[in-house]
Length: 430
Image 1 (cartoon, rainbow, N blue to C red):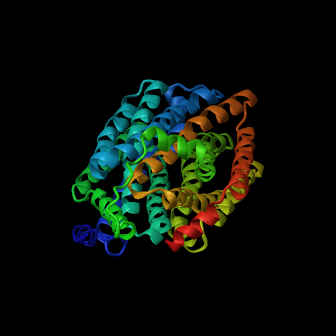
Image 2 (image 1 turned 60 degrees about the vertical axis):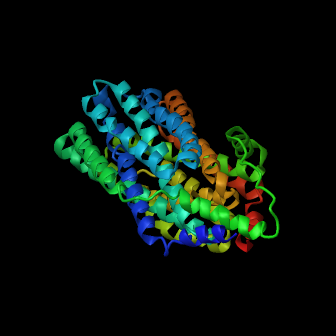
Image 3 (image 1 turned 90 degrees about the horizontal axis):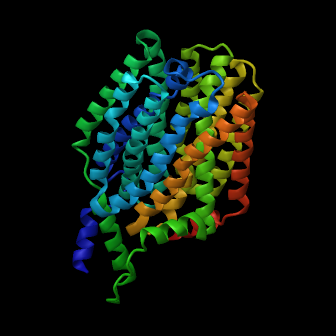
């Protein structure tokens, strides 16, 4: 018993206590966000430079499809692998997988090379971003998980917005290939250098588990049951538990919306006569509002429960998409982007925080990995669905209305088809 308590004391949880390591993880996710953000405004708007014909929406969306399939699968692998070998080795694997991305874009003779680059991006993001959020949850105390996820996602998505804006202007000045090559390689180099100071947080997980043993088995020597298998956890989180299931479908829906912004918004705004810099501002504003607002939205859910912010976020996101579809000028599109960003901020960190609330610490990585598998597979689902809608109608607006409807229905599902509020209240008492 004394050994268990000593282990817990050496690795105490809490954001303030672990502020140095927590800040280093936030720095890592900032650079992870830069890597995905550098594509946001440039590649879709200039896809014709890589051989994509006007109106060939399905082929255009293939680069998001490949990213979503790979990242979704790697999220689950990363979560399970990190429970076994640690968080830091998986983070390193993510950064090493990023190295080919800017070079493939620079030398790309056609769009197929962009698809290949985004497969590497899926590997990198699946390993690296998953590890930063998992590590920050490991370091945070139980009542701070929403705040931890909010800070992680805020940092990452502010970086997404800034990178999209910066690369839009760099592409105008130096051309898209050279801009993305220089930006990408610089990002990877700095991130790898800073990563050397990051500590693995698996020790905090073991300390949390040890404390749980001390609390629940103080008067007993009964062994802990073994962790469920990967397959059992995947089936439980994906299908068998109504609350996990509701969270997973919400993750899919919000990534369908982000697919719309990533791949079709730049095309839509270009067709409306807007330049690359203006497109960068609209898509960047969406991501920056999303990012900055998460600094308080996760903490809000720690105080009032997960369900109200999540449901409100889905409804705001649907409203912002609808306003963009209705709008005919930047006077409508800029406020709509802000509404979408606010909606994402309310729902995004709190979906994953709700999952972390009820997942036991020893297989939290697998549970979060399963959620993130479904969430980021939403990119592939969104690319296929929205690509087919835009292709069949030869227009982007029908894809916007389809997305708005799916997002609204997803929020209604969580509102009416889950007991998240009850589970959050129970968690806050433990």
